[in-house]
Image (cartoon, rainbow, N blue to C red; front, side, top):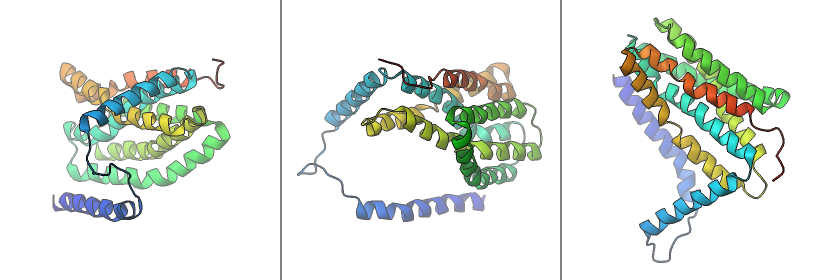
Length: 242
């Protein structure tokens, strides 16, 4: 338990150190009187989102990819956030789960570099397909998991694809967006990514409750990964004429 508490302190120190260059070197423009009209700012933000949605609808490749991204990222984020809860539900001890999660992070960095190398050779869509298919296999395998070793296997497998899928998704998206719209479209891309953790946890929890079995809950993530995969392959290779 002490190690877990110290880990939170280490994260706080990490964030503080790497935030210093931002606070020190990045200047922020604001009102002369430093006042902020909250209601006006919120209205402006929502209006900006609506304008971006209207613009994205003009580009079928971008719209289809964002929809696919929302589906499979919801599944990925759900696995990341609910891994320990699921492990606890099937009887795994805390130390084993923490070890597995650390292993995921250490495997993730070199695996992301390898994903990038193969994306240049095979193409973004094919490499993303491999990643999403591996997540589908992970969901199926997790329903039979009973030991800490099997949890390690899943953690290692997730580590192989987690960072790669996220990095390649950004790269793929950067090749889809029209020139001059980078900031606007990437802002919406981040919004989609942040919102892609709503359905997954609710779906897993509801299915597990209905069937009184957490294994069915994790299997329900196929309802996110499979549509995401189908939509990904519906993304045209070339921009269609408007």
